[in-house]
Length: 482
Ligand SMILES: Nc1ncnc2c1ncn2[C@@H]1O[C@H](COP(=O)(O)OP(=O)(O)OP(=O)(O)O)[C@@H](O)[C@H]1O
Ligand SMILES: [Mg+2]
Image (cartoon, rainbow, N blue to C red):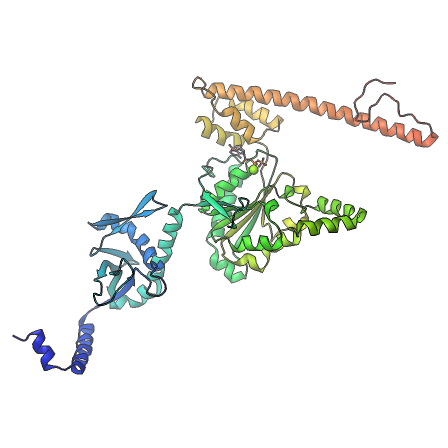
């Protein structure tokens, strides 16, 4: 029998090299498959897990749980859930555009002659095996498809974060797990408007190539405005939940100057939303405040300059504009910038022009359509209902926020049911209507008094006699008519 030792004795080293080369060629000639190996550990750097391997692992988890007999569980979401993938030496099949491929999970034993500092010196890998005739399809598009899908699965399942910049400490942002339950289903607003916003967001998240084609940074600005309690913050949470984005809640008043603002921006990642709430209250950025500041400065310019030096710089309007759409803002990609305000008219037009804030969304008082969403969510009550027509009429006659409606719809004890809650709401709306009527009457009176006052002033100006004591107080309340 021809043994291994005989082979080694008969054929010297160089010849063995040649034989190996030709046998490999021969085998390749008859072997109808191509194998691609993806190793688990990066060979360069500090033996990190290769991104491609982890992404493939995610992708294969969808087939593994149904096809493989031995599964391996890896922790995900900081240990709160597990990802199941096939264990070593298992095989699964996958199909892409009618072509079947095989994935094999395996590992090469450790090289005993080398000393490794790393615990897992066995080389674990995934092998992708497919027929030679499908070479182009698999190498050109299937591999990319697997990586994209794997990435999408991990984005969907990752734990999202809510970051803020006002915690101090060495880090720019500090984050907690984001778990706000608000979604577009729970958000009360006109269904058509809601659908339009959802479509807008979903189109944005899928438009990477389109933004590249038109030469625009992949980001979109939203301005949410409306009275307090109309759902601006709730909508931001719903947007983050829809797109599975992280939120960076930027507290502008805690940012020292424009340089720090830029650093904060650079420190954010893609697939995120940068939120500045109540932008009208943030620093000296609004048109009116700018004007007031200018007046103050004219009054005492020296003092203003001293103050600025003492503060050591500040965030300016141009700094913020640069933050939103300057050169640095394009890094990371796939980002929403969201401002909220209660007073649209207070904002500087430069801040809210289209292109910067691409979409303006007004959140307003509760209409009947919005009420129906809340009634369904809070009480499981749907139209037709005996109380609905009256509520509809009252909503048309009052300005009530969704927050007020929601508060009235929430059962306060186990004895309360849908009917009692709706009746409470009707009472609250009637009171609001009455109050609004009284307020309107008072305003009417005040206006009339102001008119009278104006007329008195005119008389005074005409004859030079002081007729101020005419029974009308300066604030407009009529105390007596004289
Ligand atoms: N459109 C809405 N749909 C569902 N719930 C709403 C809506 N608006 C308000 N609410 C309810 O009222 C509460 C307050 O709403 P939210 O904080 O979103 O208002 P806001 O517009 O951000 O107010 P502010 O201007 O004071 O920040 C929410 O917790 C939610 O329960
Ligand atoms: Mg809010």
